[in-house]
Structure formats: C-alpha cells, structure tokens
Length: 414
Image 1: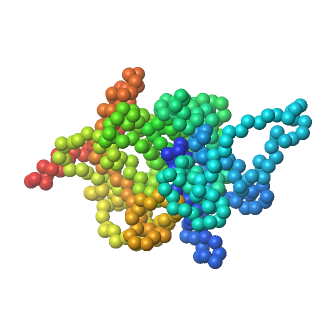
Image 2: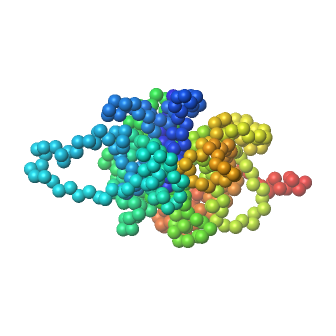
Image 3: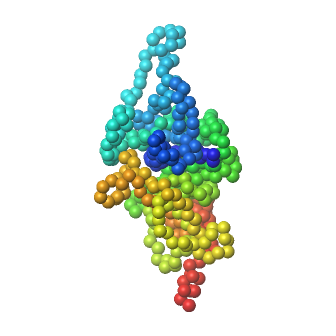
C-alpha cells in the first residue's frame, strides 16, 4: 500500500502537523457521498477499539514536552475503556487508602467543546488557541502520543532550547529504552509496504538536536528508505537580536548534521508551500549583480492551472535549463474551520481552493548558507566552530561549483 509514517518533534511542528492531519481527515467520505479519490491507507492505520469497534487513526509518532499537549489525553474517547479501572481502586494493592495529588486539568478549548457537542465550530482566533491540540479534529492511537517528561514546556529554569540539550536527551533515552524499537518499530511493522517516513521538526532550538539524533539512528536502521524532512524556524533575522542570531546558529548546526538526501517527491507529501531557504534568511545585503541560476524546481498543484510547459526532463543530465517536475491533482484543497484566516478568498467563504506551490533550488542558496556560516562562526563554541563553519562552506560550494554567473553575464553582453 506504500504507507508513510509521520514523526513530529515539538510544538512548532505539531501545529503544522495538526493542520496536516485535519486536512487528511477531511478527505474521508461517508455514504451517500461518492468514494474519496484519496487512498487513506497511506497515512492512516486500521485498528480495533476496546469495545470491538473499528478505528482508523494516523500513522503518526508525536513528541512534545510535559504540559505541551493541552487538554489532549493519551487515552482518548476511542480507547478510554482501557483506562477505566485505575490500579489505585483495586483492593489489596495498598494497606491503606492512598492520598492522590493530581494537577489541575487543562480545560478544553471552545473549539473542542463545540466538536464534542456536535455543534458548529466557532471561528478560531489567536486568543482561543494556546496549544496545538486546541484545534485538532483527529483521534490518535495512544502509542502515537509520547510525552518527554524530563522537560516542562516554557520552563525558565530548565529551558528546552539548546541544540546540545536535545541531542543529549535523545542519547540518554536511546541508551535507556531504545526509542526506535519502543516507539517507531510498531508502526513500521504493521505496514505492508512502507514507502518512507516524513519528519516535521523545528531546527533552531533543542528539537534540532533531538531530530539530528533521530536522523543518525534512522540512517542506520532504514538504509535507503526515503525520508522527507520539513524543517521549521521561527528566527527573525531582520531584527538580528541576540536570541535570533543564537537560533540561527542552532539551525546552522542542524543543517550540517541532517543528511541531505530528502526525497525528490517531497511535494507529494504536503499541501503546504515548503521553501527551505526563504527571503527570511537573506541576512546580508549583496551587491553581487550576477544572475541567479535555477538548478531545479518541483511543483505541486491542485485544480486546473494553465501552466506553461517549461524546463527539461530531470533525468536528462545533458539538457539545458532547469529541471522541473510537476505533480498535479484535480482534488482541491479544503478550507477547514480549523485553518487560520490568512487566505483572502474574496467575497463569501470558499470551501475549497486551487493551490500551486513550489520548491526551487538555485545559486541563491549558496549566499544564504554563507550568511548563516558567518553568524555560526561568531556564536558557536570554539571547539565546534571550525568544523561547523567549514561544513557550511562546503555545503555552499555545492550550490555554485560548476556554475559561475559571470560567464553567463559575459556571454549575454556579447
């Protein structure tokens, strides 16, 4: 069935992942609706609830810190029968009745309350959302929810911010419990023909180190199986504050640690426009007037778009021009009530949208990586600085070696 298992690391990625799973859930159809064009078995797994009813839950492994899951319970309504009989209520366990101290439960968001009551969901705004679970429309299997109790979310005394903290935590848990065998392998073993993995993670905090540890382990365990990575950063280079530059230094370390073998079919896996190096990372003004050369571009579109035929076959190694691959589907992108109001759909409310997204690799990447290298060179510890700086420079050279805009400009002048 070519299943895909998704791993989500941290609140930042879980916000994105929640939108992803809400979108996947919206593709389900029920009689008398026509059968969906989407193969749900790729991202969802069949199971049986304690009461014998069939379940269909995401093939997902979701990590976050203590207190970051909001009102979401590990044992949800589908599986709560497993949690009905508390061990403290059993006779003969303790000589006297124990005193139980429980933390105050986090109340459900207004959106979740409306979903549970079968009412029309309210329009979401920032004041209504404190946790990524506040707008989740999907039930997860209990094995999908993994809380890292070693750290509390927003803890000032032990913040989960440093890249090294994330890597150290991964190595500690890997020694103690073998994370891949405990958490991931059960999802892999129930697949008939695993297509690959997709990972959503932040890279400018401790989750970058955590994800790097996972990638090193997965390279050993999965061999040539495809892994698509969606790396997210919240740094604001325009402000160039101390915190922002430190975040970019952490991202730089992640860039040199993560293997650069992301699936060429990455645009098949998401409805969002993922651009690894956006304008946000143009940290230094460039006076270089050389023309930008596009090596390749992958595009995904939904609906009917009048797109020109351009580029060359990516398998033609001797062709001129950029290699362009397109993946299209007539299925429009659903605009859900859980989606933020960031898209102007004109008068009225559109239920579905045509989408055109792209991912481009060009010589501009070299300059952006070098800008990050300069920041990393100032902020990273001395014992790591040289290796990290050189690693980023090598990465930058891979994007401009063999291509020099000066030659192109001189040819055009002639």
